[in-house]
Image (cartoon, rainbow, N blue to C red):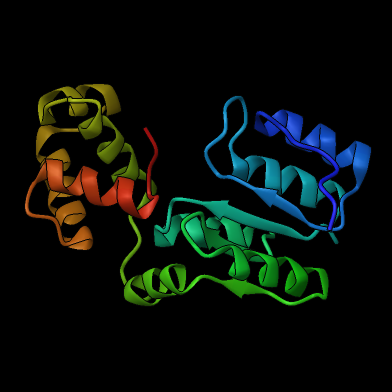
Length: 178
């Protein structure tokens, strides 16, 4: 194996891929300028056969699902063993797909969960920004009662005890980023 390029951000990752056309790419999800998911999608849009392994510290089920839908061939956590990384690189190069056990567990645990609606996601983002129900209603052009209904749905769907817990769960699962 030979390292042929490195990138400091998502845009640079796409440029480096174009220049070097690597056999296998390791991609982080949290990068400046362009997220790993966006870089992954851009590369796969231009090079549909690109073999990309997501290597990250985020095991959230939504994040894993986004990466796989974006075309990742494997999803690994940074804390795994070096041997597992080498085996995964070889397997992906050979055309196989791999998923860390932690990522697989996250997907299995939430496979039957109801997804948040786009409006519920909007409300959750505004909660995370510290807005009250009244402020959220004004920003989204809704009644305060409608916002309360959305908050109740969010808490139910995420299994959260309160608004702060809902934001924490959403961040952990990759439903939203800060």
